[in-house]
Length: 369
Image (tube, rainbow, N blue to C red; front, top):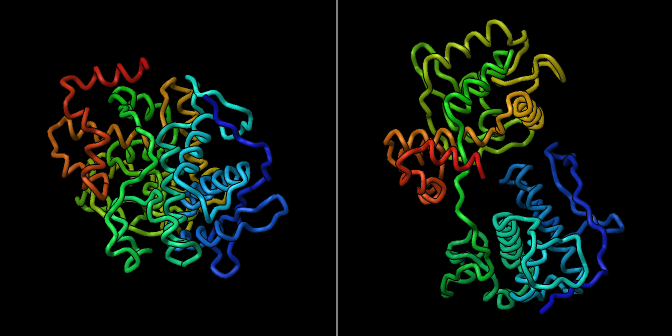
């Protein structure tokens, strides 16, 4: 049995730009003639009003891939079928760069199930948007891949009140894997490998609060308690570089020692600039400007190379959550501290950790895989 994909693709590109009216980052999908792909652009423009530019970028790549797939197979985006989405999922999973005849047999996947499912969800939102705007016919897609609870959708309220909720009809089963975590000894090695108070504070803040990278880079001085108030506040705001805080607003307790290092950082390293942000450029780039996420990624790549500890910002979040659960914190409390909107999210990621007798066995197994 084989699947055949035709080689008649056009070259699409996703371009970053600045809206001259709002001065916000926007993403534009262009075809081979450098013309805007209007159906995609309308949806990306809508998303830019309530999503971070990084999220919109990810959606843009998903829709770019969908458009390329449609073109390869001579399909009209307004009249696709469920079977087309199934083929698209297979195409992404195997290799979206190939157009040869592909035998269905064991293969080395080039994308994870999670990545493919995200793309399918993106396409679902895309059609949901165009149904609401009557660009496409609702009846054409009422049996398509709309998610459970579509009747409550902000797009389709009033359109499908009498329709039963539907599950996604195309979704790959994602393997449940432990995301991994760091030991206390590894965190200590990473902190000692940093020669600057700012970088030490970054590691200690991530490890001691479990906040996301975007939340860290968006911290302002007003978000950090003082005079015995050992906490940080996570505030829903558009942070530097268009990063939108994903989680819920919350207050997270911190160790007094972290507040002490924060004060030392302000005294000994923080430049004499007017800035509301905690983590800024000090030794390079535009002094006083908030750190670019790419700079943070570079910092952790260098730390990984220097210490032989494979580390990235989000790993501290898993470490924090695992530590709390093993210490006996309730999943509901952990959910609040992580800023998850649903406790199911917390349980899905960390349920197996709750059943492990020895956390170190989990860590060692992950390190060996």
